[in-house]
Length: 110
Image (cartoon, rainbow, N blue to C red; front, side, top):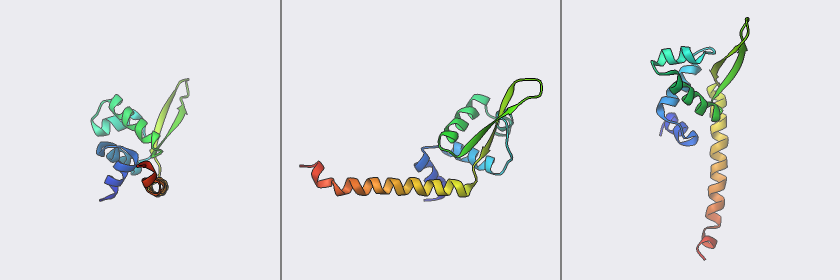
C-alpha cells in the first residue's frame, strides 16, 4: 500500500482529489479559476474537490478583499508533514476503537 492509497482510505477521497492536493502542495495560494484552468475542469468540479479537501483539513482557504470592494478566496495545501501527522492521529484513533471493539467481541455475541 502506498501513501496515496492510505490517504484515500483515511480521508475517503479519490485519486483526483489526491492529485489536486499534490498539485497545490507544489504551488502558492491559488484561486479556483486558476486551478480549474490548470486541470482543464469546470470551476464547480474543482470547488467540490476543494471542499472535500478542506473538510479533511488538507487544504486551507483564505478570503482576500479586493481594492474596489468584493472578495475572492485562495486555496493552499497544508504541508505534507502536517498531513502525515494528522493521518497518524487518525490511524491511532481508529486502532484504539478497533482494539476496544475486539475486547468486547464475546459480549456482542451473548
